Image (tube, rainbow, N blue to C red):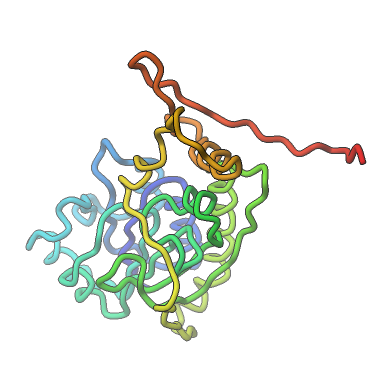
Length: 255
């Protein structure tokens, strides 16, 4: 199988390894710009492509990039943790289409930060492998797996669960995807949610003069608890005070 791979982050590296373990060839690799790149060196080494077959995401719509892709003759595209919208010109260059791995139980939580919104909106959490169409996370579903949200989960711990489930789901599904033994199903148009990257700014500031339901406030703070990210905050004397929630289940029931 000749694969065009678009990936970033640890999950992008892990799923690339699964593809390579099946003997499939990466004919073109698309990676994030250097300042946004995570696990870039590992992804490049695992892909094993010549430098002239490595494209940067910001150039993907250029005539030169599209020509490079056509000349590589990919059969299918695989997209993992890729932070750029794929346009029709690009999608038409891949005969069997492009498969995306999204850390949400579509049609819920299309778009950004599904681990946050599953907690804040109390929507189902999970992982979906789907075809990419002209919308954002709206393409036909190939495989899904639900992930339960526990009361002690934060945005970080839920994300870890989603990544583990995505790795297992892709390992199960890739043999069927690569041989065409799949029956994709359209997503429901009756339900679903969508969030943009900037939507978290609407929940991040905790207004000390506002009334919150206790459960809603806890959900916002725990959903935005993620090491390396600032998350939720309140203002004090002109400064932002950031909040991080630690949750632990009691091992014993006191009755």
